[in-house]
Every structure is written in C-alpha cells, then in structure tokens.
Length: 203
Image 1: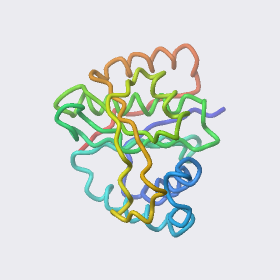
Image 2 (image 1 turned 90 degrees about the horizontal axis):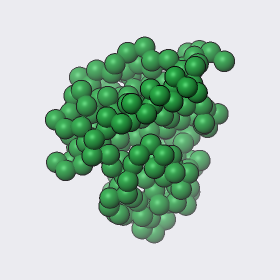
Image 3 (image 1 turned 45 degrees about the horizontal axis):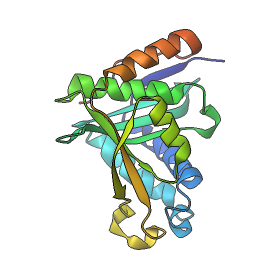
C-alpha cells in the first residue's frame, strides 16, 4: 500500500476538503442534522466555508492526509479557541475507506503539534456528537476525557437544520504532548506505510 503523506492545506485544496467534509457529515451526522439539510446542496455550502477558511488561515492550522495524491483525511485546528481548554479541533474527518489505517491517529498528532508549537498552551479539545459513539471510542483511546456536555449549534443558526436538540460532548487533553508520543509509538510499531512530510504551519 502506498504511504500516506501529510501537508498544510492551501486554497487549492478547498474543493476536495469540502467534498470529504460533506460526505462525512452525510454518513455520520444523520439523525442529529436534518435530512433536508444533509441531502441538500451541502457540497456548495461546505465549499464556500472552506474557500473562506483557507483564504484567511491566520490563527488556524489545517492539515491534509493524502495517499497517491488522493485526499484521505484532514484536520482543522483553531488555535487558543478557549481560555481553559486551549486549541480546538474544529474538524477531523477520514475518508470512509481509510478507517482503521492509522490516518486519524496521525491527524491527531498533527493537531497536537500545531497546538503545542503555535498555541499559548499545550491544551487541546474537541466536540463530538453524543450519537457518534465510534468517534468517542477513538478519542478515548487517544487519551481524551469528557469534560463538558452541550447542545449542538444549528448550522448558520437555522434550527430547521437540526433534529431537535442533539447533544454533544467536549473531550479534552490538558496537555497534548502524549498524543504526539503515542502516535509516534503506534506508527513505528504498527503503521510502517504512514509517513509525515512536514510540520504544519498555522500561519
């Protein structure tokens, strides 16, 4: 199997990031988000979001994973998003054909490195849907702990895009350093075909 490489995303990556983002939401957010929203023109909406984000990346880090030139996953980090919980993993998505290949673990590593290198603290956190138990198990395996419970915010503030008031959990790493150490150990022992080409630049 060809190796996976990691690099900082640029404006030219916005369309394919948006496509993966939309596909992942349709697969894993159904039940929390309304079908009319997920089955609508989600790709155009996500494309606009990512074009804007990557055009003005200050204060963020977006890292993409590729295998033979094909996008296999991405992570988007908002540096110092919370005064207590630190930098926020706002998005982390892996292509459904790449689950359990180590891509998600390595993306967590890059998120941790971005927080440690460019954030004011080493703290890192994210929000995960209550219904997404598979993702919760992954984050727990990565050392995350549930620290808060909240209600999902409707996309664009439109309550019609939600099914009721879905719940989400905040999972946190007060010090993200173990994410880097754990991922390096896993890669050396179990992921010989995964490689990293850069340290992400959050600027």
